[in-house]
Amino acid sequence: MGIIILSVVGIFFLRDSSVTGNTVIDGDSQDITLSYSSWNYALSDNTVNAGEPVTITVDTSTVKGCYKSVSIPQLGISKYVREGDNQITFTPTKPGVYTIRCSMGMATTKLTVV
Image 1 (cartoon, one colour):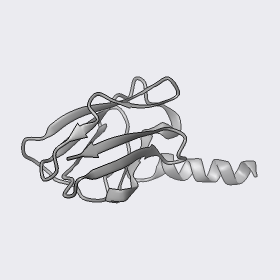
Image 2 (image 1 turned 120 degrees about the horizontal axis):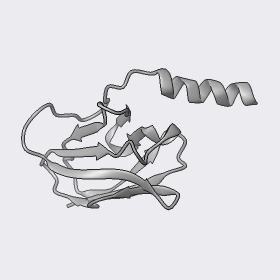
Image 3 (image 1 turned 60 degrees about the horizontal axis):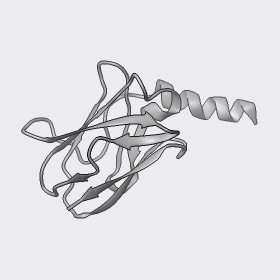
Image 4 (image 1 turned 120 degrees about the vertical axis):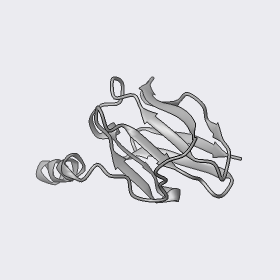
């Protein structure tokens, strides 16, 4: 069992750090910060506007281990962040409540798109 867990965790640490999903390259964006506090993810702002780019900057001083593998499953976004490569930029197109979680689902938070 330990070998399986180590293999799964290793895959997340060794995979490409590029973002997959609905990404944008440039333009003005809604900037928010994702950190880790009180045993969970925390966002500096939980609400963004649909149709406008969003940039989530992950605070790598608080986000450690598997929590660096950040995903928004409903948007098809997944990225392993590290210092110097800790931003996730995308444009949400539909209003709703989206879950941001780590690869193992241990840390989560909600992002509301209006």
